[in-house]
Image (cartoon, rainbow, N blue to C red):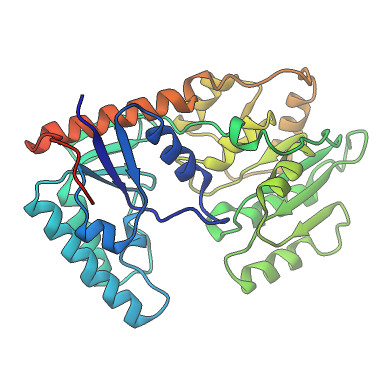
Length: 348
Protein backbone atom coordinates (compact mmCIF):
# COMPACT_ATOMS: atom_id res chain seq x y z
CA UNK A 1 0.00 0.00 0.00
CA UNK A 2 1.37 3.45 -0.92
CA UNK A 3 2.60 5.74 1.83
CA UNK A 4 0.06 8.11 3.30
CA UNK A 5 1.17 11.62 4.30
CA UNK A 6 -1.06 13.25 6.95
CA UNK A 7 -0.81 16.97 7.74
CA UNK A 8 -2.18 17.70 11.20
CA UNK A 9 -3.50 21.13 12.24
CA UNK A 10 -1.55 21.31 15.51
CA UNK A 11 2.12 22.35 15.89
CA UNK A 12 4.97 20.50 17.55
CA UNK A 13 3.87 19.69 21.11
CA UNK A 14 4.57 22.06 24.01
CA UNK A 15 4.16 21.40 27.76
CA UNK A 16 0.59 22.71 27.60
CA UNK A 17 -0.44 20.70 24.51
CA UNK A 18 -3.52 18.53 24.95
CA UNK A 19 -2.20 14.95 25.46
CA UNK A 20 -4.92 13.67 23.15
CA UNK A 21 -3.17 15.33 20.21
CA UNK A 22 0.24 13.91 21.11
CA UNK A 23 -1.11 10.40 21.61
CA UNK A 24 -3.03 10.65 18.33
CA UNK A 25 0.07 11.80 16.44
CA UNK A 26 2.11 8.91 17.83
CA UNK A 27 -0.64 6.32 17.26
CA UNK A 28 -1.13 7.35 13.62
CA UNK A 29 2.62 7.58 12.96
CA UNK A 30 3.04 4.04 14.35
CA UNK A 31 0.85 2.63 11.57
CA UNK A 32 2.80 1.10 8.65
CA UNK A 33 3.23 3.31 5.62
CA UNK A 34 2.12 6.54 7.28
CA UNK A 35 3.96 9.84 7.77
CA UNK A 36 2.50 12.44 10.15
CA UNK A 37 3.46 16.11 9.97
CA UNK A 38 2.75 18.67 12.65
CA UNK A 39 1.59 22.12 11.63
CA UNK A 40 3.48 25.13 10.39
CA UNK A 41 2.03 27.54 7.88
CA UNK A 42 4.92 26.76 5.51
CA UNK A 43 4.21 23.01 5.64
CA UNK A 44 0.47 23.50 5.24
CA UNK A 45 0.68 25.97 2.36
CA UNK A 46 3.76 24.75 0.49
CA UNK A 47 4.02 21.09 1.42
CA UNK A 48 2.44 18.21 -0.46
CA UNK A 49 0.38 15.73 1.51
CA UNK A 50 -2.62 13.45 1.12
CA UNK A 51 -5.00 14.65 3.82
CA UNK A 52 -5.37 17.64 6.15
CA UNK A 53 -6.70 16.78 9.63
CA UNK A 54 -8.12 19.70 11.61
CA UNK A 55 -9.22 19.57 15.25
CA UNK A 56 -10.17 23.04 16.55
CA UNK A 57 -10.30 25.18 13.37
CA UNK A 58 -10.93 28.33 15.41
CA UNK A 59 -7.26 28.20 16.44
CA UNK A 60 -6.22 28.69 12.80
CA UNK A 61 -8.12 31.99 12.51
CA UNK A 62 -7.33 33.50 15.92
CA UNK A 63 -4.36 35.50 17.19
CA UNK A 64 -3.09 37.47 20.18
CA UNK A 65 -3.15 40.78 18.30
CA UNK A 66 -5.37 42.26 15.58
CA UNK A 67 -2.50 42.09 13.09
CA UNK A 68 -1.64 38.47 13.87
CA UNK A 69 -5.30 37.52 13.66
CA UNK A 70 -5.73 39.23 10.28
CA UNK A 71 -2.62 37.51 8.88
CA UNK A 72 -3.81 34.11 10.06
CA UNK A 73 -7.21 34.65 8.50
CA UNK A 74 -5.65 35.45 5.13
CA UNK A 75 -3.44 32.38 5.43
CA UNK A 76 -6.43 30.21 6.37
CA UNK A 77 -8.31 31.37 3.28
CA UNK A 78 -5.26 30.60 1.15
CA UNK A 79 -5.01 27.14 2.74
CA UNK A 80 -8.64 26.29 1.98
CA UNK A 81 -8.18 27.44 -1.63
CA UNK A 82 -5.05 25.30 -1.95
CA UNK A 83 -6.82 22.24 -0.55
CA UNK A 84 -9.71 22.71 -2.97
CA UNK A 85 -7.45 23.19 -5.98
CA UNK A 86 -5.39 20.10 -5.15
CA UNK A 87 -8.48 18.11 -4.11
CA UNK A 88 -6.80 17.37 -0.78
CA UNK A 89 -9.52 16.19 1.63
CA UNK A 90 -10.12 17.85 4.98
CA UNK A 91 -10.85 15.48 7.85
CA UNK A 92 -12.24 17.20 10.92
CA UNK A 93 -12.60 15.84 14.43
CA UNK A 94 -15.82 17.21 15.96
CA UNK A 95 -14.60 18.00 19.47
CA UNK A 96 -17.22 20.71 20.07
CA UNK A 97 -20.86 20.91 19.08
CA UNK A 98 -21.00 24.58 18.07
CA UNK A 99 -18.89 27.46 16.79
CA UNK A 100 -17.29 29.26 19.78
CA UNK A 101 -18.96 32.36 21.21
CA UNK A 102 -17.36 35.78 21.15
CA UNK A 103 -15.65 35.59 17.75
CA UNK A 104 -15.90 38.01 14.84
CA UNK A 105 -18.11 37.69 11.78
CA UNK A 106 -14.99 37.12 9.65
CA UNK A 107 -13.90 34.26 11.90
CA UNK A 108 -17.36 32.73 11.73
CA UNK A 109 -17.35 32.99 7.95
CA UNK A 110 -13.97 31.24 7.71
CA UNK A 111 -15.06 28.47 10.08
CA UNK A 112 -18.18 27.90 7.97
CA UNK A 113 -15.99 27.77 4.87
CA UNK A 114 -13.81 25.09 6.48
CA UNK A 115 -16.94 23.23 7.51
CA UNK A 116 -18.34 23.27 3.97
CA UNK A 117 -14.99 22.09 2.62
CA UNK A 118 -14.73 19.14 5.02
CA UNK A 119 -14.79 15.75 3.31
CA UNK A 120 -15.19 13.52 6.37
CA UNK A 121 -15.93 14.09 10.05
CA UNK A 122 -14.64 12.06 12.97
CA UNK A 123 -16.79 12.12 16.06
CA UNK A 124 -15.75 10.90 19.50
CA UNK A 125 -19.13 9.39 20.33
CA UNK A 126 -22.04 8.25 18.16
CA UNK A 127 -24.35 10.98 19.47
CA UNK A 128 -22.39 13.93 18.06
CA UNK A 129 -24.62 15.50 15.38
CA UNK A 130 -23.18 16.00 11.90
CA UNK A 131 -24.68 17.73 8.86
CA UNK A 132 -27.12 15.58 6.94
CA UNK A 133 -25.41 13.55 4.24
CA UNK A 134 -21.93 14.01 5.71
CA UNK A 135 -19.38 11.22 5.65
CA UNK A 136 -18.62 10.32 9.26
CA UNK A 137 -16.59 7.86 11.31
CA UNK A 138 -17.02 7.34 15.07
CA UNK A 139 -13.68 6.80 16.84
CA UNK A 140 -13.81 6.95 20.62
CA UNK A 141 -11.35 9.12 22.54
CA UNK A 142 -8.40 6.95 23.56
CA UNK A 143 -7.57 6.48 27.25
CA UNK A 144 -4.66 8.06 29.16
CA UNK A 145 -3.32 5.00 30.97
CA UNK A 146 0.04 4.82 29.21
CA UNK A 147 0.35 8.60 29.20
CA UNK A 148 0.05 8.80 33.00
CA UNK A 149 1.97 5.59 33.74
CA UNK A 150 5.27 7.48 34.17
CA UNK A 151 3.97 9.35 37.24
CA UNK A 152 3.43 7.91 40.73
CA UNK A 153 -0.16 7.38 41.83
CA UNK A 154 -1.10 8.45 45.35
CA UNK A 155 -3.39 6.62 47.77
CA UNK A 156 -6.90 8.05 47.96
CA UNK A 157 -7.62 10.31 50.92
CA UNK A 158 -10.85 9.10 52.55
CA UNK A 159 -13.66 11.61 52.07
CA UNK A 160 -11.80 13.63 49.43
CA UNK A 161 -13.81 15.00 46.50
CA UNK A 162 -12.01 16.93 43.77
CA UNK A 163 -12.50 19.03 40.68
CA UNK A 164 -9.49 19.04 38.34
CA UNK A 165 -9.05 20.90 35.06
CA UNK A 166 -9.32 24.32 33.50
CA UNK A 167 -11.76 26.43 35.51
CA UNK A 168 -14.31 28.04 33.21
CA UNK A 169 -17.78 29.39 33.92
CA UNK A 170 -19.58 26.69 31.92
CA UNK A 171 -17.89 23.99 34.01
CA UNK A 172 -20.06 24.86 37.02
CA UNK A 173 -17.38 24.99 39.74
CA UNK A 174 -19.43 27.64 41.57
CA UNK A 175 -22.34 25.19 41.74
CA UNK A 176 -20.02 22.48 43.08
CA UNK A 177 -18.75 24.73 45.87
CA UNK A 178 -22.31 25.76 46.79
CA UNK A 179 -23.50 22.14 46.88
CA UNK A 180 -20.51 20.99 48.91
CA UNK A 181 -20.99 23.71 51.53
CA UNK A 182 -24.38 22.19 52.32
CA UNK A 183 -23.25 18.56 52.08
CA UNK A 184 -22.24 16.09 54.78
CA UNK A 185 -23.73 18.22 57.57
CA UNK A 186 -26.55 16.08 58.95
CA UNK A 187 -24.71 12.75 58.70
CA UNK A 188 -21.05 13.46 57.92
CA UNK A 189 -18.89 10.63 56.63
CA UNK A 190 -16.02 9.36 58.68
CA UNK A 191 -13.53 10.95 58.26
CA UNK A 192 -14.74 14.42 57.34
CA UNK A 193 -15.35 15.10 53.67
CA UNK A 194 -13.10 17.63 51.90
CA UNK A 195 -13.14 19.27 48.49
CA UNK A 196 -10.19 20.41 46.39
CA UNK A 197 -10.55 22.56 43.26
CA UNK A 198 -7.40 22.56 41.13
CA UNK A 199 -6.79 24.25 37.80
CA UNK A 200 -6.18 27.54 36.07
CA UNK A 201 -9.21 29.90 35.99
CA UNK A 202 -10.19 31.59 32.74
CA UNK A 203 -10.15 35.03 34.44
CA UNK A 204 -9.16 36.77 37.65
CA UNK A 205 -12.81 37.71 38.15
CA UNK A 206 -13.89 34.06 38.12
CA UNK A 207 -11.11 33.13 40.56
CA UNK A 208 -12.23 35.84 42.99
CA UNK A 209 -15.88 34.78 42.66
CA UNK A 210 -14.93 31.21 43.62
CA UNK A 211 -12.74 32.34 46.52
CA UNK A 212 -15.67 34.31 47.86
CA UNK A 213 -17.99 31.30 47.40
CA UNK A 214 -15.63 29.07 49.42
CA UNK A 215 -14.76 31.60 52.11
CA UNK A 216 -15.48 30.41 55.64
CA UNK A 217 -15.53 26.67 54.87
CA UNK A 218 -12.17 25.21 55.86
CA UNK A 219 -13.08 21.88 54.21
CA UNK A 220 -12.57 23.49 50.78
CA UNK A 221 -9.11 24.04 49.28
CA UNK A 222 -8.61 26.06 46.07
CA UNK A 223 -5.43 25.70 43.99
CA UNK A 224 -5.67 28.10 41.06
CA UNK A 225 -2.75 27.23 38.78
CA UNK A 226 -2.01 25.20 35.68
CA UNK A 227 -1.30 21.60 36.67
CA UNK A 228 1.57 19.62 35.24
CA UNK A 229 0.78 16.01 34.37
CA UNK A 230 2.52 14.85 37.53
CA UNK A 231 0.45 17.27 39.64
CA UNK A 232 -2.74 16.20 37.87
CA UNK A 233 -2.04 12.52 38.61
CA UNK A 234 -1.38 13.32 42.26
CA UNK A 235 -4.51 15.45 42.63
CA UNK A 236 -6.81 12.95 40.92
CA UNK A 237 -5.51 9.86 42.68
CA UNK A 238 -5.65 11.51 46.11
CA UNK A 239 -9.43 11.82 45.68
CA UNK A 240 -12.11 9.21 46.27
CA UNK A 241 -14.39 10.89 43.73
CA UNK A 242 -13.86 13.38 40.91
CA UNK A 243 -16.78 15.77 40.40
CA UNK A 244 -17.29 17.40 36.98
CA UNK A 245 -20.36 19.64 37.34
CA UNK A 246 -20.31 21.00 33.78
CA UNK A 247 -23.39 22.91 32.72
CA UNK A 248 -22.87 21.36 29.27
CA UNK A 249 -20.98 18.09 28.72
CA UNK A 250 -20.65 16.16 25.49
CA UNK A 251 -17.04 14.98 25.18
CA UNK A 252 -15.04 15.12 28.41
CA UNK A 253 -11.34 14.44 28.45
CA UNK A 254 -11.51 15.19 32.19
CA UNK A 255 -13.83 12.26 32.84
CA UNK A 256 -11.68 9.93 30.75
CA UNK A 257 -8.43 11.04 32.41
CA UNK A 258 -9.93 10.37 35.85
CA UNK A 259 -11.15 6.94 34.78
CA UNK A 260 -7.72 6.23 33.28
CA UNK A 261 -6.33 6.84 36.78
CA UNK A 262 -8.90 4.46 38.30
CA UNK A 263 -10.94 7.13 40.05
CA UNK A 264 -14.74 7.29 39.71
CA UNK A 265 -16.46 10.41 38.43
CA UNK A 266 -19.72 12.24 39.12
CA UNK A 267 -21.08 13.83 35.93
CA UNK A 268 -24.37 15.27 34.63
CA UNK A 269 -26.93 12.71 33.55
CA UNK A 270 -27.19 12.68 29.77
CA UNK A 271 -27.16 10.04 27.06
CA UNK A 272 -23.43 10.36 26.38
CA UNK A 273 -22.52 9.86 30.05
CA UNK A 274 -24.95 6.96 30.40
CA UNK A 275 -23.14 5.30 27.48
CA UNK A 276 -19.82 5.91 29.25
CA UNK A 277 -21.24 4.34 32.43
CA UNK A 278 -22.39 1.27 30.50
CA UNK A 279 -18.92 0.95 28.98
CA UNK A 280 -16.72 1.60 32.02
CA UNK A 281 -19.03 0.19 34.68
CA UNK A 282 -21.91 1.78 36.55
CA UNK A 283 -19.92 2.23 39.77
CA UNK A 284 -17.27 4.27 37.93
CA UNK A 285 -19.59 6.81 36.34
CA UNK A 286 -22.08 8.28 38.78
CA UNK A 287 -24.70 10.57 37.24
CA UNK A 288 -26.86 13.33 38.68
CA UNK A 289 -29.78 15.33 37.35
CA UNK A 290 -28.75 19.01 37.19
CA UNK A 291 -28.62 21.21 39.12
CA UNK A 292 -26.02 19.60 41.38
CA UNK A 293 -27.14 19.29 45.01
CA UNK A 294 -25.62 18.32 48.33
CA UNK A 295 -27.61 15.09 48.19
CA UNK A 296 -25.98 14.21 44.86
CA UNK A 297 -22.51 14.52 46.40
CA UNK A 298 -23.48 12.48 49.46
CA UNK A 299 -25.08 9.73 47.37
CA UNK A 300 -22.18 9.47 44.91
CA UNK A 301 -19.49 9.31 47.59
CA UNK A 302 -21.42 6.60 49.44
CA UNK A 303 -21.86 4.65 46.18
CA UNK A 304 -18.16 4.55 45.26
CA UNK A 305 -16.74 3.84 48.70
CA UNK A 306 -17.28 0.05 48.63
CA UNK A 307 -15.21 -0.39 45.46
CA UNK A 308 -12.24 -2.74 45.45
CA UNK A 309 -9.05 -0.60 45.49
CA UNK A 310 -7.55 -2.93 42.89
CA UNK A 311 -10.52 -2.66 40.50
CA UNK A 312 -10.26 -0.74 37.24
CA UNK A 313 -12.90 0.65 34.86
CA UNK A 314 -13.27 -1.11 31.51
CA UNK A 315 -11.53 1.08 28.91
CA UNK A 316 -10.64 -1.78 26.58
CA UNK A 317 -12.35 -0.11 23.60
CA UNK A 318 -10.06 2.91 23.89
CA UNK A 319 -6.60 1.51 23.20
CA UNK A 320 -4.43 3.75 21.06
CA UNK A 321 -3.19 1.11 18.62
CA UNK A 322 -6.77 0.54 17.47
CA UNK A 323 -7.46 4.27 17.52
CA UNK A 324 -4.49 4.92 15.24
CA UNK A 325 -5.54 2.21 12.79
CA UNK A 326 -9.11 3.52 12.62
CA UNK A 327 -7.88 7.05 11.93
CA UNK A 328 -5.77 5.81 9.04
CA UNK A 329 -8.81 3.98 7.66
CA UNK A 330 -10.79 7.23 7.94
CA UNK A 331 -8.07 9.17 6.11
CA UNK A 332 -8.04 6.65 3.26
CA UNK A 333 -11.83 6.78 3.04
CA UNK A 334 -11.69 10.60 2.81
CA UNK A 335 -9.12 10.37 0.03
CA UNK A 336 -11.36 7.95 -1.88
CA UNK A 337 -14.33 10.28 -1.38
CA UNK A 338 -12.33 13.21 -2.73
CA UNK A 339 -11.70 11.29 -5.94
CA UNK A 340 -8.01 12.03 -5.64
CA UNK A 341 -6.35 8.79 -4.55
CA UNK A 342 -3.43 8.66 -2.17
CA UNK A 343 -0.81 8.50 -4.89
CA UNK A 344 2.86 8.21 -4.26
CA UNK A 345 4.73 9.70 -1.40
CA UNK A 346 5.05 13.43 -1.97
CA UNK A 347 8.15 15.38 -1.11
CA UNK A 348 7.42 18.29 1.24
